[in-house]
Length: 609
Image 1: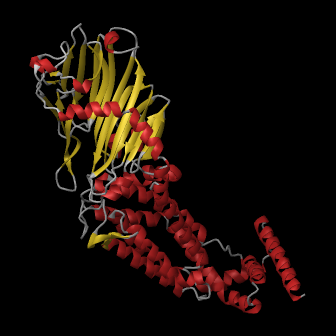
Image 2: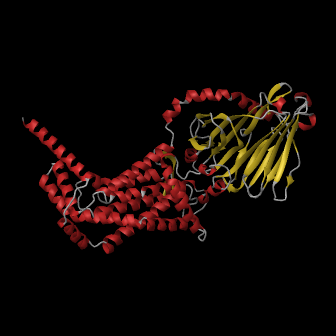
Image 3: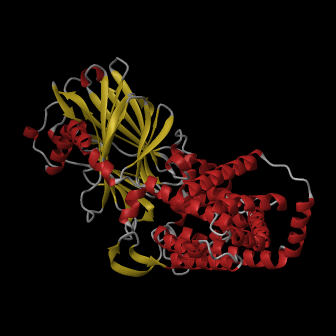
């Protein structure tokens, strides 16, 4: 733990804090945007009221209350029809011809109930049509469901139809394939020239995100609105309230939770639109956000129009989304975003393949993480050795550095110049221990994203941790403590303790205790980790603990059995005898130090006068 290594750790901590800061919206920004949000919500309030009014009415209407021509007395009772495969169960309602409930069969919520991504009247798909010379939302119409048909490949298809009085026909056709979370949703309009005004199709989509995971606050932080606009992927955090306008073609829009998402895909793109989202004002509400989107597109003139859409109700599984055929849908998985997008290739081409390889023959995910950690440490071992070797060289020069310090006392300028001269003569790079530590930072951030977004860890237990995708709580306080939370994670404590031991071991090999940074760093850095790691997934804190244990072992072995300190001293002496050439960087550093020295001397002379 020399000065350069500490610089690396400080930069690591700074980058981690920056990452967490960027991932979380500032509350002051929310207040600043409040006015704009209120204005945007007003623009879709009409559609909202229509949907709510329909939800409050009974499902059975009399013939007198129904628009003649689009609904008959025989078709006004709500009917349900089900599409189902091995993964998902979709219940469609004749009221509006849309999904009423969508249940994922292989996943349970934190309450040990099947995950439902649609469950209630707040999930809406609707569009305006001209019904009997009056504007009407399709959520107000009652469709007639047909029989579910099954194709040779196992696909299930059903059509829900509503007829108008002048030959207009609206058809909602749904197709669910085997072993798939994707649902083909085709809207057919016969008599589109009468149903649509000026060939304009305007779709309203609303999705209610409800809590599925143990930690509501953390799930809110991981929730995002993801979309592809004009071929480019983008996202917004939706644990706040905001609005986004689309002025370019939209391919798809996804309301993403931590491990699940609901996505609307336009196979022929929408021309534009806007979306706004609102977070609940109370922390007691088990809701994450309410997403409301309106899309518009021009259809070809003519009587018959088909609008092909697709719906996805499923997990944030990288392989499923990668192989979906939908452009850039795999980017919903946060393997590195924004400023940290540079770690995404590390996850895609190194971390994930190695993780999947170990998972192929090891059943315990905790053991898989352990093996992954060993692989990563083996991969980075040359960097670790280089760092320790640099530290050993600095340690060998420490007696001479102490003599220089004693000689110049408080004259830091002269001390720095003499120290640089010593490094140059001995052929030592003072940044040799820092650079290898910095090169390991991308791997740490890659693993942070990987463990945080890997749905395979969800519900997997290891040792005392019941779920590797969330924190492992051994003590619950019952109340939230600022920065720390309402619990203590045991893996976090182990990570903190092993980090403390690494610092202490490094201190034992660093004779200089005069530098305050060196003196207090063994206490400051682990203390910071306690607050950073306590809410993170136990998979990540388990990895960090294993990595720290390996570091302790490597430190002991390398320092005592690999690095030959006598050879290092001999090499340093040999370097001193060689002719030296200054690099441009060294020349500039010496010029700066000499300039600062002259300024300091002049200031002291002026004070003497």
